[in-house]
Image (cartoon, rainbow over all chains, first blue to last red; front, side, top):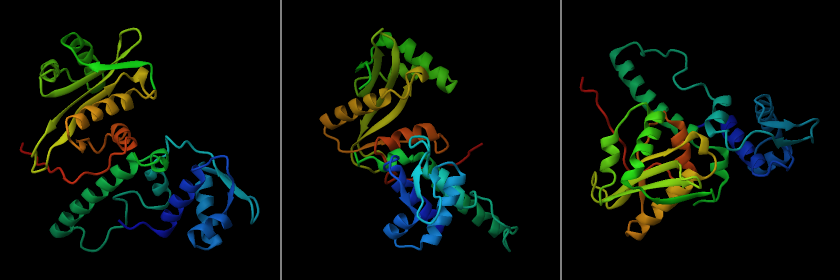
Length: 131
Length: 141
């Protein structure tokens, strides 16, 4: 499964911040850790902030911290901020044909399984040591 | 750990088990729960200090099911909603897993409705991941 870069950075950032909700990290700290531009990461953090998952970030060096609920926030909650909802996409040529519809059913099946997986894993589960 | 005791289910638990399951699933299946008392089954209940049913778990070890070597299967788990988020489910799961391990199996499996995010999340939190099989299904009506 391929996630857009913003989605992947959103997951990296939220998991790193949720690891220790008391800790504050700037977009620059996180960008350096994941080897991406601060600008790109700042944009991702703004989306997470609007969603009520992180707070902070005043000025270029302003820090962010996690303010969500680790047990109640799933990977899907974060993915849904950056990716179109499964099955929600502009009609593509050929979709109205028999073959197009058959292919759509297969792709929907894959999307449903991916969504169930992402929705079943909380940040808490991701961050717990492997049992 | 929760203040519940985990012990094997007995015939005297069936009324409470059936009632809890029916409350949560909307379907009464007393015969199914009676069969779970069979000698090959692992059927455990969690009991509060007051002797009330807090939850139950049921499973079995199956060898060569769908071509796979022996593994412990979890058939059902149900926790009284008033007792949730206190580790009762984890205590039941851990006890069942210990029994499976004592019987010599090294894997535990289950099947979950992919739209049932609550129970999927519970098993994920126990460290379970997608297994080697993919369930297939066809409508015959």
